[in-house]
Amino acid sequence: MERLMYDSDGSATDLPGPVAAAARRVPVDQVTFEAFEANARAEGFDEVLERRWAARTVLEPHAHPFALRARVVQGEMWLTVGDDVRHLLPGDTFTLDREVPHAERYGEEGATYWVARRTRGR
Image (cartoon, rainbow, N blue to C red):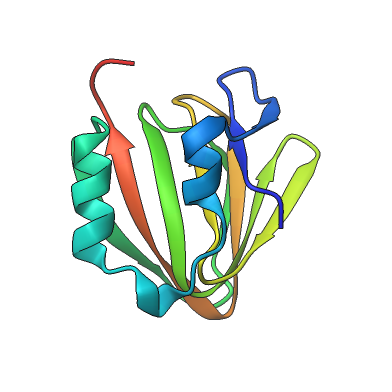
């Protein structure tokens, strides 16, 4: 599956350089939350947490006042940005710039992902 990041204008672009290598699907059991958090903080993210979503939760289009990078670790979700819909499974990653409108839908088992947020700076 292609790894994308969504820019503030809502356009999807391939993840650049070293981020692309890090964004490939890596088996969930090969990355710990602690390693995800340490890497995110080293890259300037100031908040890192685990989000759990109940089965069949649907979030209508919305935007966040922070940039984010996330890694799905359990279940499945669909992320919609504009006309682009991505089905994300454990090991998949995605990024969103701040204020990018998007919608989320979670699968039959719900989903869990780790998310790093950049609330300050860029």
